[in-house]
Image (cartoon, helix red, strand yellow):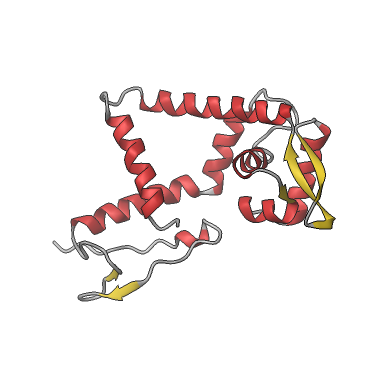
Length: 187
């Protein structure tokens, strides 16, 4: 039985991602340049990973997770504002335009959400030293504490999901996931 590689358009889900180079293969299949195997078992693993990533990257999946994580965190913290808080914690001060690119929204959507966060004391606007016309969004101390609490909730949910795994498998999964992110199609 010959398995075929199924191309999933990751770039549709991940902003600024380069599509992998492909080479023609035997028959109607396509191989990714530098792949160890083409048309075999490893292609099936690639397909399974692509399907799993597609599920994880779906907007509805992320929104459902963010809604669960933000429950009870205050009126301004919800599935719409969580990505902004998380991105600011990860990247530091950003303009609304930069943050929009980071989270996959338009600038006006970021500005509306940032205003809610600012009213709640979670972010503040500071002048951009490189462009006097622009402002940077910056997490406040309260915003940082909120993100830390949200990340603890996320870590707890992940740990609960992995609690039935045999000892060592979660660490192995984490190590392989970090390697996949570093070496995979996301760089």
